[in-house]
Structures are given as C-alpha cells and as structure tokens.
Length: 343
Ligand code: HEM
Image (cartoon, rainbow, N blue to C red; front, top):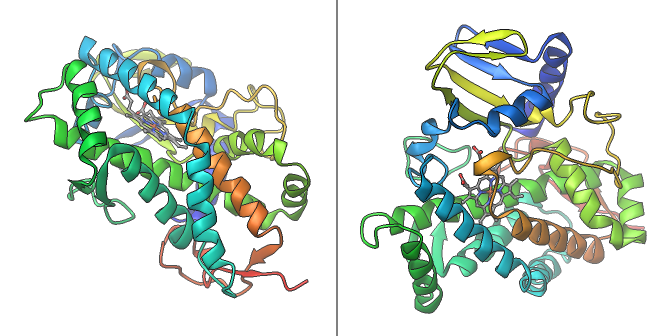
C-alpha cells in the first residue's frame, strides 16, 4: 500500500468514523472497528478479540494468549528497555555513516537508501544475526525474512533469554528470532519513513525541528499518531460481542483500525493537524493491552536519533518535483526521490 493510497485510506476511514465506529465490508467479510475507545477496549480484551489470526506470523507472542505469551512479552520488554538505554549513540553513528555518503549525491531515495538499510542493520546487530527482509509489500505466502547467525555471543544471549521464558530451544527459537527480526526492523523503518515524509513536505515543521532538536521526540510521536506503521491490527471474535451498539458475531475477522482511532476527534483535538508538541498524545501506534509493542522504548530512541541525524546532515532539502513510481513502491512521491536545496 503506497503513501498516496494510505492517505486516501486515512480520508476514507475518517469519513466512515464520522458515521459510526463499526462497519462491515461484506465483499471481504471483514468488520472494521474505528473509534478510539472501542479499539482500546478490544485490544484489552483478548478473551473476546483473540489475536489467533497472527499465529501464522508468530504462535508464541503476537499470536499467543497464554501465560507463556505474557512471560515472553515481559522478558522482551525488559531486554528492549535495557537496549534502549545504550543504543542512542549507535543509531546516530550508523545514521551519520549512511547520510554522509548520501549527502554528496544530488538525489536519493530516503526510504530504500536510508531508513531501510539503517533499521535492517540495527535490528540485525541487536539480535546478533544477518537478516534478509521479506519483499515489500509483504507476500504472505513467503516466510517473513531469512536469518543466519552473525554474532554468536549476542545470539546466545537471546537464546538463553527466550529459552528461560519458555521457548523450546530447537523447535521455536529460530522462527521466533525471525519474527523478532521483522518486528524490529519493518515497523521502525515505516515510522522513520512517515516522519521523513512529513518533514519533507512541511517546511515550517522542518525549520522548527532544525532550530530546536529538543522537539524531535515529541514530533516523532506525532508522526506515529498521524501515519502509524500498522494501520490495522487483526483479531478474531471468540463470541458474539456488542461494540458501540453493533453486534459482531462469534468467529468474525475484525480489523482494529489504528489509523482511524489515531484521528478520532473525540480523543484528539484537531486530529488532521500535525502538532509537534501535542500533549497528551495517547496514540495507538504501538497497540494496547497484553500485545502492546514490547519494543516501543527502543523504537522511540531509534526513530528519534535517526531523524535528528537526518535534520543535522541535511537541514535543507525537498522532494524531487517529478515524482514517479519508486523502488520502494511505498512512497512513490519520493521518486526520483529527493534533491537537496541549493541555497
Ligand atoms: C516504531 C516502531 C514500532 C511500532 C510502531 C511497533 C508497533 C507494534 C504494534 C502495533 C504491535 C501490536 C500488534 C498487535 O497487537 O496485533 C507490536 C507488537 C510487537 N512488537 Fe512492535 N513496533 C515497533 C518496533 C518494534 C521493535 C523495535 C521491536 C523489537 C525489538 C518490536 C517487537 C514487537 C513484538 C515482539 C511484538 C509482539 C508483542 C506481543 O504480541 O505480545 N517492535 N508492535
């Protein structure tokens, strides 16, 4: 789904939400829940809104609902928090390394040549692997990425952390590490892409951030609200349930629309505006409830450090005027992508 499509989707969802929170798409047999409070309630009720459709990606955490899932989630959150306390400099160094090489070029694609190699290499390093991303847009018939061990010490650390939390050393660990690799690299890449897209388009915001880099973390959260990496979180109902006066039957596939909820006017003042210092900003880009992203602290450090580096190395830039289809497919308006201002 490219950015243009995503933006029109956002408008469609906003219009649907103005009508009511719950909609049924009969052609695909999918229910959509759009209202912020309905989403929070559903995400916190896994006994009714089961995440079982996600077992195809990962049966242990994202698709799991047992005590084992809770244990793994806690362990992951602790490890990610620990990493987040030390990786800021690492992200900055890797960002600078990529950006300084790109800075001498007249044009480049900030997604495929900056965000993607950055997030892929950082996730691989944090997990101790060599990773190969799945093609984008994801082909659900393909495995979600291939990995081989690159750093025995880091790999062994994760192995014992996860084995202590209940994974089978032989059968479960490699598929789980592969899921973790995709979870860690893909969403961060899309978050950096969303933030870059805003600063490339909105000169005032860019200038404010260049003048005051203290504003960057708040801005990154606002970018996550405005254009979240995961638009919908998939669930299946275990029983008939009433949501905002609408009966959803048992066994229904439900898309919980983070994209719509993050612009719900009942929760967000001026939801269509990008307010750098929006407070409070209780967006759902990291989900909510027992599956809430355990990597959120790490992701925030990563996205913030990457954007700060970008603004520092290239404070003046703009999108190339003649946009066509780009190699990422996701942000065609970047192609041939981007040209630095000459001034
Ligand atoms: C900006 C970056 C990120 C965003 C927006 C994001 C978003 C999300 C969301 C929305 C979920 C919940 C999915 C659901 O409920 O169906 C999730 C789950 C998850 N995320 Fe993230 N994520 C990001 C980065 C990361 C990173 C860096 C890691 C690991 C290092 C990570 C690991 C995970 C894992 C393991 C889960 C499954 C948790 C569970 O089901 O208990 N994520 N993420």
